[in-house]
Image (cartoon, rainbow, N blue to C red; front, side, top):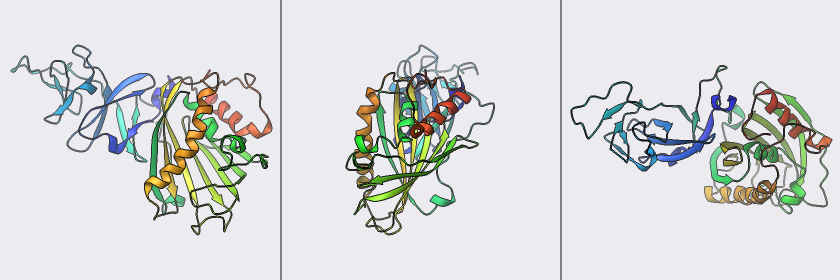
Length: 327
């Protein structure tokens, strides 16, 4: 499965502390835990002895201890102690499969299978964001597929209906033409514009807002938005929003947003509250869509020229060999 070779977010970095944490990725139960050296580990959430959940256990002597018989495994996944046999030295075969883990964008990322093409983490940052403040929002558990959520993120035609009074208005629902091009990691849409009553937390007047969208991986995307001058209380306001999704099952997802904002005064909670308002407007509509998986056959649903970013995204998923969360 192509998806297994990609990097996926599974938890906020600060959520993986001294106790084991249960997560699910691509329908596989995993356990996350952190050893004393600060390194995060991800394993199948199943002890190889009798199949009990590691996530019900604890970390003892810098080892993850199974809750059933107390077997202890070190950070490399090797069993080091079997309490019922105090003098027993576990052989190399008494071990757990360890998955690759990275930490970036305030999240723990896991790769379930080796990547033939050396898959990279979805990008978020770079020189244009170096001076901006980063704030994470979520997680949100959403009863739909990861591709449905990405496609919604790329869609501007819903602003005047789902986000009426915030990101759009029924009096200005037109979507001007924009450009879409392929990139080495996905897609880029430029020249996107929307008339928004309240485009951000600091809006003081309706504004024309310039958007740039980028799909950076099958289940990740970034948008950058710049409102016209004089429409915000913060001079030089600009922001980027990263959307990172853990595909839990083909029809359920866990979602995080990472904000990069030109604002160093507002408390995190206020920035998060604005994003929460916007996404919880999207969520019930997303969860209502049928099928919950995203149809890759462009004839399965109707399209117009306004939808060319989502149509391009569906073709990109096809080219990438994605099968999880699509139909």
